[in-house]
Image 1 (spheres, one colour):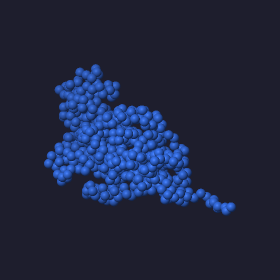
Image 2: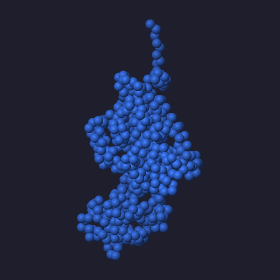
Image 3: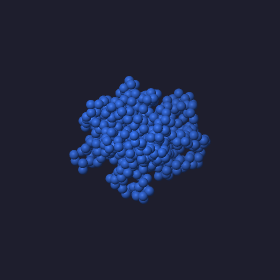
Image 4: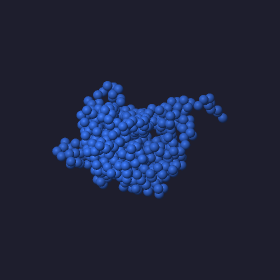
Length: 557
């Protein structure tokens, strides 16, 4: 019998690439929409086209690969659909940074010119990501690769908007949103990072009109007092309830504003009297609605002071305005005291600046009617969470759901399918294809929130709403593997979308991974640049060893 000579060392780079190419050449990864076998399908959580993959992607996709290969060995008709996400604000931020580094004036670019640069970025980094997934050994059906802005998928996104609008679930409202002054756009809660910062608590003295009495109010945002439209006390606070209904003269502005009673005020916090700025604080916004207060927006889109403040503060940045207001209040003898104060401040993840609560016209999706059946699907075990303790988190979020701001003031993304009549902008047209006489109409400039496309991912990859044998065969999917940090932003919304548009579940099991973090406790993130390059590890230790080690060390979510 002949002897086979074995290498003394294992050359993983050569062997891994050899066998992966062998699998591809023999179509081992392909799903068959005409097969009579039991189907097993997964749609990959699409990585953002903002750079390279991280160790978190290694963990997530290795778990999916294990599930897929197990089902394939069990003789099932397996389909694992790969793809990438356009990641609207994240990608636009990267493209803007790239163009600025090349000395390109953004203001000189038309929308179409900017989008051509964005598509170039997508082709470059989307291609890199797909090649990285292949190097990772992912046994996806690569002929089914999708992108959240390819033609068929985009049509599905626009169709979902039109259907929801026609049902009365989408509306345009003038409401408070998370606002990034750098991107000059609304952003989602997921794009807000909270940081603990040492600051100051200023105590200001407000004079009661036609009286020698005063009220003292504490604030961490002196510049916003220029937009105050009331002071509030608790209606049962004996110190102040006799003042309810009186007015104060707003220092530096001279505007008379009322003293109101509202149960939101905590008599034990600070002085028990709070300033109310409805256009720049979410709690104040609700107080303003309850008491029909005036909503005065005092900031431009870049967070500088606008024309609604006295002349001397106009065009100042919010930091400059804060310094000026404190100085002027001190000069007028209305600064009682200043205390050190630790505050939890929301920062824009992309802009790396404090966000503003900003009053603007946005498109919103009503969520209550979508959330109720989605709650039932999980609590009746039609969809199972692993580990199951995440059901409690899911229930809390879904039972306290708010309307979803789905519009973004960006260029890269799905442009909202709403057109305004040029001769009368109050007349609007909503459709996928647009009006028959486009020269008489102007399309809304905003794009949809990234999540308003990715929530359709499990079925839009099959070109829904077209009737498709692939949709019939591979939907619902069997499993979703994801991190618990997006349980609301993505998992819950996919469940809502599946029920709303197909009256079915999008997946049967959800496996929550642990969150891989760096030595400071921060999540591995492309935007933070704190993840080891997994491909350096592949080169040094081999892909399978890295996959095995990552799986071995990572507990459940």
